[in-house]
Length: 418
Ligand code: LLP
Image: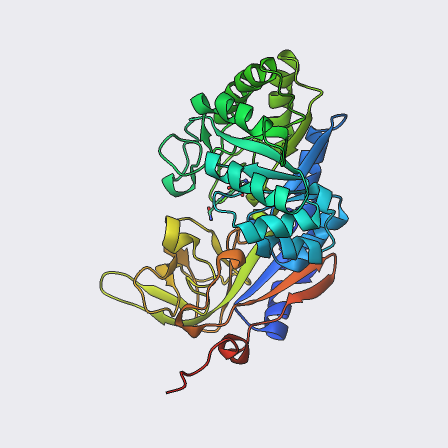
């Protein structure tokens, strides 16, 4: 990672040494490289050069306002999945016309909120949702632009919790129902059919499932347009993986060169294209800095107990996900094999297993690839406040979220009146 590297024996994010930041702001602490995010976005933009394309950052990966502002300023659109996420992108200065709204369970209230904001498109996921959106739009005297999420039934070969394009899951509309559903949607006064979308899963490291999904979606586009329903845009979702542990996903520009080759060959290359990347825009831009509290040698295993935990970074506990863990200032001594664990009272509270580390209490470690689905999935479990976040640009670090205080946590609660 060019923007996250050792210089003079100290781990830096861009021009800033992480130990300086940890001393100033405490730990656990998330630190992001702005340039890494812009470079990742740049790879998509290069891939789409000369095309009518819109990158809609899927903010569920990291929805901190300071991160959203980076993408809004770079002209990005956004993929949202709740009224809360809509409020976030608007607060960050997003152009509402570049916002698309995904998700299987939009409420009427969220639909009203999105119509009032003037978002670009609703990605609808069921027949029932189509009818509800139609009635909400009619009530508010508007026409809602929609795209139908197709389930292309391809196997992305990723973790079962994060594959979404297979038959047996809750997302999207089955391929063989699609044409009937498009006909129905096109007949409704409150809706305007503008596109088609799919999303097959996350942390995909191979181009093959994308190519397969693309062919199936294009087959449908042909059938739908033959029925007289024009599709203005094609949205291929997100899902491109990152390197956690020697993973080798295609680069975004290389992937899109390949996909555009197929689109051109089938005559769809000039169509408006939308993608919804999340992880690949932010995942490797961030690290979580944590302090070693205790080392605890044991008969079966040795534990390295740190001050970050599953509430800060739930991916290992939830998906057995691997994140590299490295010292901010490597020692020269002998490494011991540790399980790196947090203070939360659960055996599942681990961050890394069987890691060779030479550490002592008080040392600082960086958990890598922590820019995506980390802070955004953080909780207050064990009444732990959420960590602080810093955005680094060159040799400047900006606090984009202060550490959550106990007052913040208690504010929404009250005693009963008995
Ligand atoms: N579009 C839709 C409709 C999605 O459901 C998702 C992610 C994305 C785009 C962005 O996917 P990405 O480019 O980030 O792969 N918490 C899990 C990942 C859940 C992904 C959910 N959907 C994890 O930590 O691995």
